[in-house]
Image 1 (cartoon, rainbow, N blue to C red):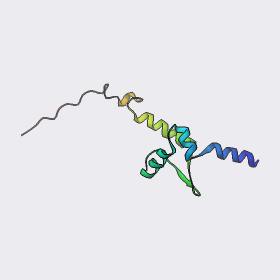
Image 2: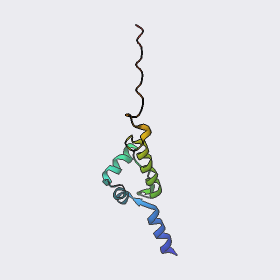
Image 3: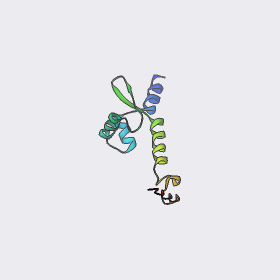
Image 4: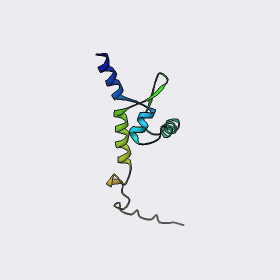
Length: 89
């Protein structure tokens, strides 16, 4: 029973090194993002910085949707050009 709980815990949370490996980036990048309050949400579990796998996946999806190359609605080549403002002076 205890082993099952431990394996569920390991599957649900990742430390900085494993989260960086999961995202394909360096652990230093995660530390910098955390310091700047950027990147995926993290939290402290005692002295360790941890990432929830489900939160990492949600963050990745949000990054894809925010990128114009992945989201056709944000593609500047599809949008109509803006009209120029008329000067009054």
